[in-house]
Length: 83
Image 1 (cartoon, helix red, strand yellow):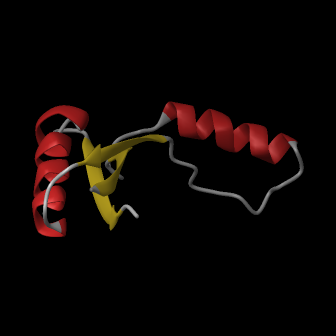
Image 2 (tube, helix red, strand yellow; image 1 turned 90 degrees about the vertical axis):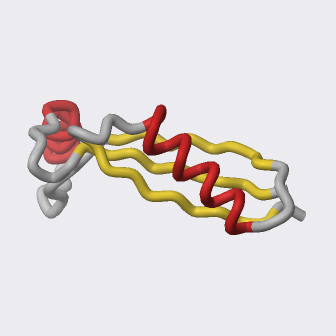
């Protein structure tokens, strides 16, 4: 069994108004050193297959076809063995 994490973010070329709003909020807390805040989503899943390579292939397939919009978003997949 494998645990996969898929992190989906807007591409750098896409304006992120939610990220800008959060950045502004952080600045109002007095943390002016924070910049370039981007908001994304993280999806976790367990994949019950025999190999890490197969789990990674499944997670990337799901991310590329369902979890991320390939026109606007990028994704990153990490896979770890459970147990």
